[in-house]
Amino acid sequence: MAGAPKSTLIILLLSLMLLGAAASPLPLLNSSLPDPAAVVADFHSKVTTSRRRMQETGGGGGCMTGNPIDDCWRCAGTDWWKDRQRLADCGIGFGRNALGGKGGPFYVVTDSSDRDPVNPAPGTLRHAAIQEGPLWIVFAADMTIRLNEELLVNSYKTIDGRGANVHVAGGACITLQYVANVIIHNLHVHDCVPAGNANVRSSPTHYGWRTRSDGDGISLFSARDVWVDHCALSRCADGLVDAIMGSTGITVSNSYFSHHDEVMLLGHSDGYLPDSGMQVTIAFNHFGVQLVQRMPRCRRGYFHIVNNDYTAWEMYAIGGSASPTINSQGNRYIAPANPNAKEVRAFLLPCRLGLFAHGFGSRFALFLSLLAEFFCFHRLLWIFALFWAVDGPVPCGGCQRS
Image 1: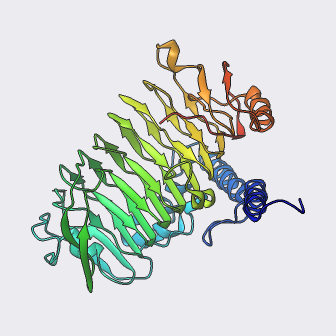
Image 2: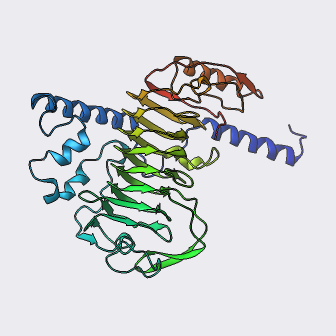
Image 3: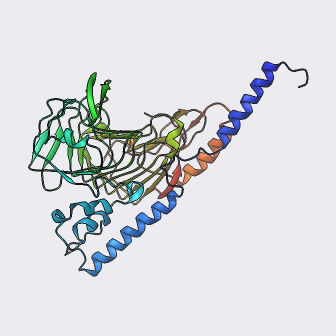
């Protein structure tokens, strides 16, 4: 080494640094919780408590349902419409800290129009969503809102559709970008299309140029502490709920998904390291008719997928790459008739292999993941496996399936 040229020494030094970085765990994002297992335990504790109270009050004949979210805001001893902001205390999972507009005034949406995304009219949903400070947004009547451009929701907002039949449909839809503490409850979001190449206001003091959007139903871009509950989503141009670019602290619960291809993407790309801090709870949802894939599709972070109902899929249900931890518990799967959608088939896999689950986890998956870590120092492998259902966290590697 004494006679080695400087360029060789530099290359060796960089190689050692890269190997060290690859072996070291990435630091969590500032808003990530340090003990995800404790969040999972708290979730199950709340479910157990709610079910016990339901049994004590007559086995479901009264207000209690066994669902800790609904029991919290529906069965508090007062009419929910007299205490709407109690909802902010009812979150569970990784999005449990989402405050929404708690403590702020109410804003009643009376106008379903969206004529000017730069200067929205008072009384419109856009005018409400861009305000500074906590705001609890409700609706005066049933309405369908066709947005001309993305609805850029500001921090500390609750969009509360309870008591009305509210559809955001037929145009651009909802974007949470660089914001925190947002609750979206009881909305129908469907038939969303791309928009953009236009100026859009994001706050009372700022508007800016938006490039072409993807056409997601609800898009999270570097957002945190977000709770989506009791929403129905279908037929959008891209994803129904997509969370990317370091978004974390998210719960999607009690929602209905149908008639869509790429349902839910959690993670920007395999190479985007900040998504290692992503933490998401997917709970009590129904994945219904004519869904194809991504229920969800996970990258890098920690994902608790619990007590969901899957009633068929055309390609796969749950998938992952780039070494996520997928903790799948208590889900019901009714597999499609197509045998190719029930198993993990042959894939040519790159380094850092692991499980890509077509709806099901596997006892064999952990063995494959450990085996993959060894073979990662060699080039490529072919793996053929059929995985049977099992509960518990399963680390997923780099199986490439979009």
